[in-house]
Length: 247
Figure (cartoon, rainbow, N blue to C red):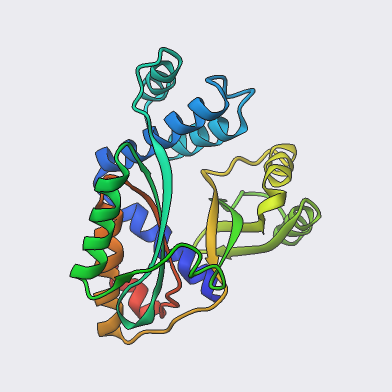
């Protein structure tokens, strides 16, 4: 299994085990709010909002909650969020890229710095991890029944996929950031709907850890993910199957 697949599995398994639905919904609402303000409240005319709504539905967010968040933006009632990113290192040299959406940057940077410091890591300068992460489009869906896997893979590659991986009944499709929209259209043409479609930061350099180191670093990752202003956390851990089983 490649490092990217292991990284995706960490993310998927952790999401499946996460009981904090309220916190997940809060992060999704922030993304819907920013997308609606940026490109307008009509998902049909706003690709980013359409994607945010699709991801919210994939996490079983009620339709009326989604519509209420969009109406707040249209009515000028939504909070004024800004998107910011932070880069740093967790213990044992693990690179960590943090994406945040906040209405108070001073609060957010202080919180993120505190988490890094408390867990033995350090917040770095923006741009310091550019050589470690590449921006990619990542689509995740259940393996479709009754479809020839090889034939489907060729179709997806024709639509711009750089990599198609199947693991534990799920299909993960990776494409260049520039081909994100084309891949969305290709999936629609194939009659497939991803339950997660996002621009993610995929490691180009991976870090292997001992079991003890892995547990320590995951505490850092989880503390960051737990912060209300943090939307996504990316890291370059290459976990073993045994380490994945501990999540």
